Image 1 (cartoon, rainbow, N blue to C red):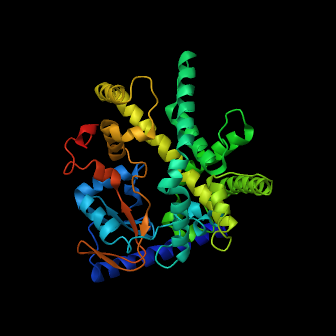
Image 2 (cartoon, helix red, strand yellow):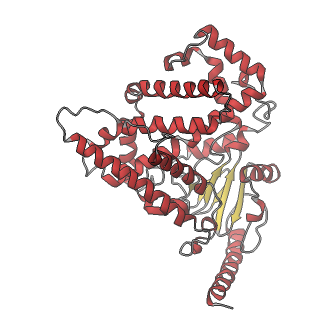
Image 3 (tube, helix red, strand yellow):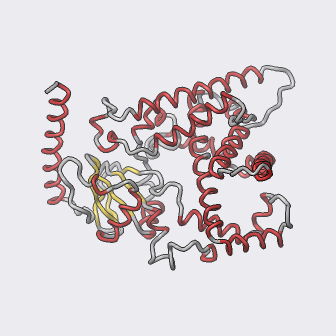
Length: 414
């Protein structure tokens, strides 16, 4: 037997003893939420299955809307009701505000620069970065300024679909929407397309963003057994480091290019990158700009394209709903005309379709995992310090106690 096997065996034996002692202490001293009995070492990992949101929704029917489970070394509390979700996200939002950082996102120290993962309670950088993002990217004025870009990219998507139809070619809605979302973001931030199918560098960028989505979606042993961090047994962090390094290098090159352009006479660009570069380095340094751009691309491409793909799938499965949406568009906008953003207020049924799609097909079934820094009381139970907290919005969206016929796609419910 080699030294690595011996070391791993001793490590797991130590974990087994510690977990059994911890289980005995918790049973005697804390009012933990109900849940399935954890096995030694693996805890309740064997119950997760290939689709954890579905497995945990089934367990919630047995153990209740708040469950305490053990996934490896990590104590996890799962919320599966709208009432408790409001308690966590509204009434006690500050207590549950910090995020549980996946090991994959520790690649290139991304978690230390990202507004998504910085601690909220004790880190002024989070407030600074959040303020910068709201004022320079997501404010009403900034969104109004970039409306023409969204119109242009949507028209390009429609033209692509028309061209494919005329050529008798099938359209992969998910990939087409992914490319559109990617180019919309890249034009908003950098004033250029980064997903041109005829450009090698653009194709590499699209593949990098896609690969990041794939790696972050994989179950990672390190997230359940932190002592494996140095080993990285599945090489997920190693691959993420490679992807992050390449995409951050690309961002760095675009920033260098912009800095040269800004030195030229009569330069006048007003995109997001210029707005960020106008902020003093003391408040927002280059590392933060690069990682902020990475966050925007990671969060704003796959989610948008997946939602659109699910919406189209549901409309094709329900022709009567599609026909009703088309009638609304014809009546309010006119046949053959492109919908303008200002028209959305006149299209209540279309808005209901979007809401119903998000209800039945949420893009983040558990939202962003949260973490408590101290013991917290919730619904008469104790959420132990350092516990991960998951809000199963997939289960809430399909709760028969909240929704009539929850598995039926019915926009009229809104």
